[in-house]
Image (cartoon, rainbow, N blue to C red; front, side, top):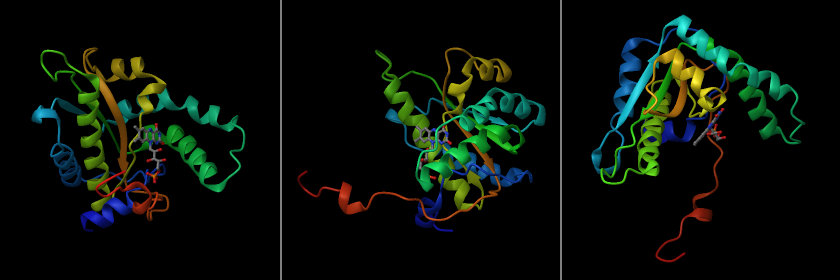
Length: 197
Ligand SMILES: Cc1cc2nc3c(=O)[nH]c(=O)nc-3n(C[C@H](O)[C@H](O)[C@H](O)COP(=O)(O)O)c2cc1C
């Protein structure tokens, strides 16, 4: 699949099969993530790749309560938001069974005289997007998420992530078990301004 098709169809996947991800594909996806841009090429990122079933189960336990909470949310009143809520509930209920969970982490080191979190997040997010698009190009599903907000302290303890290292994203990775297809985005003409706003 070429890069344009991968970008056009890299939906946030919230339903996965439990089939394992071949290490060869995982290597490629991680390679792509580490090709991203970063401020002054600092590359101050780290990737915690969780494959161990017990570690995944423990991460799954951290986010599982969201699935229960979502059940109590009011009906959003439209199909798209209903689907997103159903997906969010499924993702949090099943995270522990998804074959790979990647935590994209970063150190706040740039600029050296006055490090800025925005700089650090820019690198973590660029790497995350590369990862998601590469996964799609290889026939895998992935989702750019910030699920760590549901229990960051517990995730740090489970994975031994040092306190000075930030967690940027939590990306499930596996073979999709849900519909893929084009992403829904605003038309180019609506958001592009040539030469003047
Ligand atoms: C910074 C950021 C945080 C996100 N956090 C979550 C999340 O916690 N859970 C989730 O299911 N999706 C999350 N997403 C994915 C978006 O919700 C998703 O990309 C968007 O709704 C568009 O859907 P699509 O990519 O499938 O077209 C996040 C995306 C970004 C950029």
